[in-house]
Amino acid sequence: MRTLAFDGRMGASGDMLIAALLAAGADPDVLAPVEDALGIRYDIDTVDKNGIAATRVQVLLDEDESASDDHGHDHDQSEDGHDHGAHNHGHSHGHSHSHTHEHSHDESHGHSHDDDHDHSHDHSHDHSHDHSHDHSHDHSHDHDDDHSHDHDDDSDHGHGHSTETPAEGHGPHRTYAEVVELVEAMGLPAGVEADATAIFRRLGEAEATVHDTDLEDTHFHEVGADDAIADVVGVALLLDDLDVERVVTTPLSTGDGTQGMAHGEYPIPAPAVVEIAANADWSLRGGPVDAELLTPTGAAILAHIAEGVDTLPTLDVDAAGYGAGGYDFPDRPNVLRAIVGDGGERLVHDEITVLETNLDDVAPELLGSLQETLQEAGARDVSILPATMKKSRPGHLVKVIVKPEDAERVAHRLAVETGTLGVREHGAGHRWVASREFRTATLDVDGERYEVAVKVAADADGEIYDYSAEYDDALAVTEATDLPVREVMRRAEDAVRDAE
Image 1 (tube, rainbow, N blue to C red):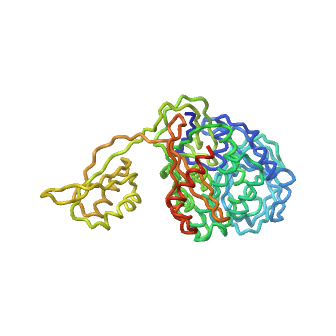
Image 2 (image 1 turned 30 degrees about the vertical axis):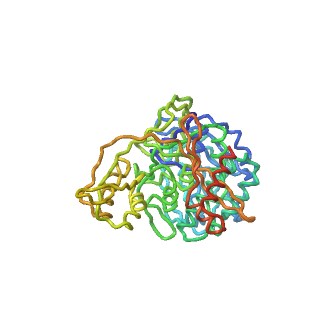
Image 3 (image 1 turned 180 degrees about the horizontal axis):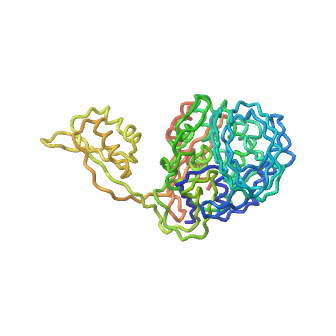
């Protein structure tokens, strides 16, 4: 099976994903529909990241667009290498820049943003240098930023685009429905359009949860701006061009520290990242540096396209490449590695351990809640089997599959929930699991459209052997219609099966 594997140890953002896909062999020409629709240009070059030649992508406005943004603010702004992605600055940088930059210089500067949506930029930059400190901040939540970025730049861009403006934050702040309408108007291949709109739905649902709003009323702010749309749709186009059958990622690093938001400092990862990760197949891990490494846009893209693996799978490598991140760190390259190759195993090797305990005095109601409570603690699967205990008393055997690193936490939760005096562990072993991905079925019921996620299981050769509609999605349709849950699930599975 042709597989794309991401190494997530330095997190991911939208521009890093685009850069990694290009470095792994995707054709940049397929990005043309996005450039035409948004009036932007993907600027692609190579930078050095701690000795690794990595591809960097910046989304720039066309010259006509760079004369003024959608808020009527004039910019003659330097291409300073900041790649904040969808970091919602609500820009009103209350300062005026009048810099004259000479190329190939080494400067150290810090600038404070006190962003309040009242741009007053007068950037008279005339340079052709390369700031190599792109910050891939990609927040899809409201940031009223009052923070300082200090940079040591050893710059040598050599782009020579003195009048071009980074597209970050430009364009209207659209609602979810407006973003979908824009994407649908691009004339994309059906599969690419479906992927892009599904990614934006994940972002919108995360935003709605964080801010306690309805999806349709949620404004994406900078995630609905042109550069973020370019990131999401660009990844969908490049992934389609690579024509891989399976996408995986190792655990994604979030970084550590805090990030300035509208209501003060908040711990990394951002709330939207946590919400997205809760519905993703892969796992998060903190560190390894005090900086934001995983952005909401990067998380949403990977939540839709990738399944989680603990380590890189066995691959006969065809191509590999590195996408450059924004920060420069003294002791590690800030890159996202992408590897493309043929996988040798039909099922994936997944390290697990098994916990079990015998119960003979637990109320049935408590047993009924164990599935949910133990999965919240990290269990991958929970089984409760009837058993005959000593003195012929009826009881139950509880078996729990967990990752080895989650065993103690889940065992403690099992003991607290049931009162058991001991939990046995069978020791680390493994299980073989199928390749899984979610696809969205759209059902038309009495003129209303409803979406149901369907899990598709396949082996490494791409042979699909199961379609399984998500119960919660089907139940939501049932509550809005007169259809039974079973019928909703059947229709959704058939819709995805027929689309193959």
